[in-house]
Length: 262
Length: 161
Image (cartoon, rainbow over all chains, first blue to last red; front, side):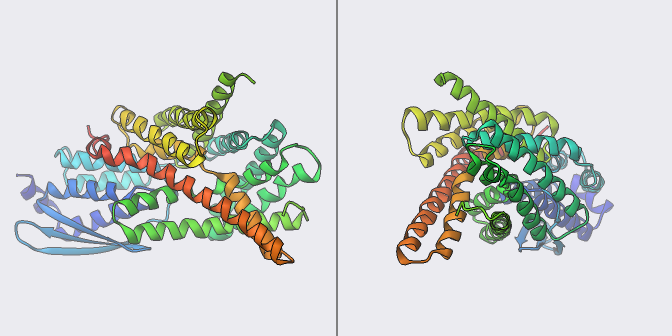
């Protein structure tokens, strides 16, 4: 039976470590707790084990119990600090099915896992172009005119470029969001300052919206509904801190340009 | 503008916004088109409900998000991806950004207010916009999560095979 094969190939401790790292990357890439629970349960069933997961704000603790012998094993891992990555989420979820259907054993799965977490993200230039278009469209959805869309596009282009540069240099994410919001808001003031748009207020308000951490907010509600209160609160607090940084940057930009929008 | 044109325009810009927000979350490339389609349908639904049924933005957002969740559940086994992959980015164009902006604006104004009347006025604006913003976000997320939780098995086995 598969259980025997797996336990002869890799130790219980290394299986537990694999599960901890798997959960850590799933959390980091933006998976909901309910999905992580299900994926891990699915894989653990193949070795007749039970997995219990404790998610703390920065760490994850895995307890694996062998249903046959009652032996338990623990492993804690730091939550991977990576950007939201749905490609990784999808591939890691597929990996759990490959294990569940005995198409891969856990030692092979660990190898595939390493390959997945080191895969390259989308071309940053392409992402930047799409984000610029997205934020300009956002401005239009709020009733902005074409000049406002132009202002928002430029503000997003400069702000997003700065974000890439700062994150590339491992600058603190809160400082990065503050700086990007400040720069984008300062540029977003152009509509007011030069009378370029009849919807200058919308341009200014939209110029920083590409920074809003929407997915952490959505995930926090999903986790809340699923009863993962600690993780839900942790995600919500993190997203709120970033939103506060955006608000501070926006206020700073407006005050610097001495706009009388307030 | 002809009303049909307005709906198409709303759907079009929502789709472009969803593509950009999807790109930030680094999805499998084949799924970006689904995010665009789902966002267009969801946002146009909200637009129509607000425009023709004169429904409140919170209720309309709930209905739009519910549509997004349903479509994501239908498409996910075909795309072999978790429904969140396209449902979450598709939801983001509905974020009430302008309400959030006006909340911050009014908050700063209330701090700088010179008298009680001014303070009350700006604090009222801050609360009013803030409450609307919070409830729209809650409605969006709940509306989209309900179908995923209703069809758990389908949602969590979409990556199978």
